[in-house]
Image (cartoon, rainbow, N blue to C red):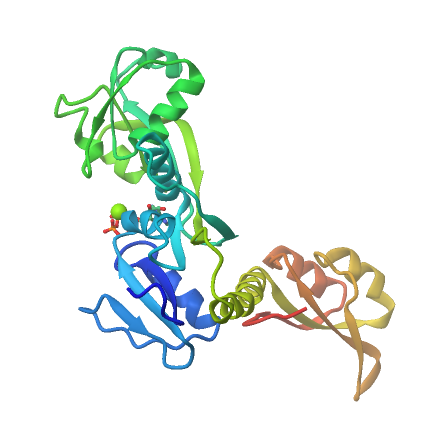
Length: 300
Ligand code: ATP
Ligand code: MG
């Protein structure tokens, strides 16, 4: 990667749990990419932007060493890399631009289900298998617990049965993997979601201009995902009740209908979902044609 190039380089996970959403977000922001499975680099056809597709573990270092301009990576991987780099005197600075609305997971301590466990202090002088030794030790230190790490890059959940460790510290989303291995989640030590980060040194004016355009677009895409457009016909006489039922009903647009003056059309953007129960209540007070629509993009 040529640092002096005027093309903005964005590192994303090549294949894994963050890949689809990372590319999807950038595409929703208006960047066009043609991705070839085998290629590390993908050029945008409509912006001076290149995607660098790598293992997620490599993204924090690429940012902190200033090799790429932006990166999309899980907070868990980011904070683990930062702690490791602080401990080993490598550059560990970066700029956090946005928390992204995907990649939610948690890093938790789990123990075999037959074990009697009354809290983290029970792990004193025990061994804990993990892929996140720095996050784990930083948590243990804050809790005043001394335990040793068994660092594995995968299959952490089989470590207790294999006799390698007494407990595990692993990423959990549903808990199904833990359960399948006879483990029970006990303490959440870190909550994570994807982050958009930038290298520490200022960007060239050309690159900064792209970032300045990208950030409001990301906000617009994320806001739109959380919002719904609600339309319905309401009896004029029931408008107050309708407003009470609708979530976040400030400033709805009220429009006359051509065929009647008893009903009006009510349109609004809501940051809350309209539940079936509310729709049924609206119907019961005389509303009809109730529509809940997804919003694709938003700008204030
Ligand atoms: P790589 O080959 O890139 O190193 P990996 O196997 O380390 O991939 P994945 O399993 O694809 O990583 O997870 C990538 C990141 O996705 C995790 O570090 C975490 O931030 C996030 N993540 C983990 N589990 C989930 C989940 N169940 N749902 C959404 N995001 C998750
Ligand atoms: Mg990884």
